[in-house]
Image (cartoon, rainbow, N blue to C red; front, side, top):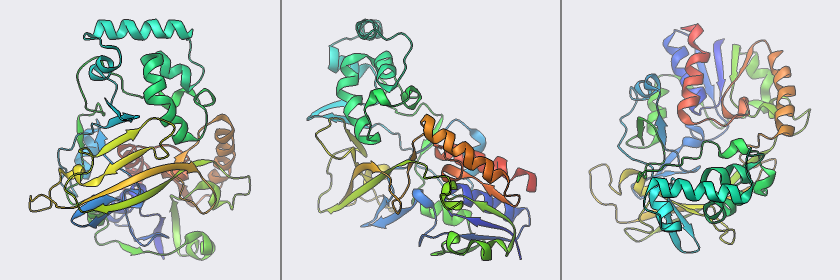
Length: 370
């Protein structure tokens, strides 16, 4: 009999498992995939730690979380400075004075702010009611049209005026010449990849992979005093109230016999005509070096294509519109009646989480068992 069976070896489940095991609990972690680390999983290809489920860049202002993850791994000094490609023209992300200078020729923050205010007035935006109006309010019409509209509509599969304003509220806009995308005190990539970090966190804990909990739920439940479930909340209840909506992502990976493909880890393609949303060149997350510090002669790139989620696809981004929020509330009521089951994480809570937020939530959730 286990004290806890944890469903899912992603960051939420892994942190719960580590803390509970250290508190003296008997813990089992199961995952339907053949690997640990969830969507943060990295796989070594040609000496490059490839982010198999898309780029994951750790960033946080939470010192407690930063100290926690550094118990299990060492982080490098990677700083996220993506580039936007609009029909062959390249722009700095986040939106900053380099972007404003290239778009409008302005040189000072005052000039840039005045240009945005002028375009906001032309558009008649006072209180933004949707993503389009929110974007124009933040950066003006020109930048919205070139660098936000096409990318966002590819990413979400919906027109920008049909998306809620809050999706883009955390978009970084800076009136400085600062190309650091994340305004976070702590930032980097685990040296050796996220899989290595998660394996260290799960050291000494029993793990069973290639196990689909939902196919034998009652049997697993009978073996534990409590369950921590990090899978999709609607799947747990066999979609009895209907499907929650997600966006999914498809990847086309290439290993290329060249030293350098695009010169940057992340390049976003912001026009609608280019079918992929971005290209990741994984080696630059670790500065193009192997563990001995030597240049890696090959490179691996991933083109990302956003798509509507269908049953059987991997769910990535919750579509937190009014309809789905109401449906989640109904599932949440059902979940609250499952007395021995804790629902957590991105899928269990139908919530967009950054990695540091997932870790913080997990630490808080199991703190009472310490």
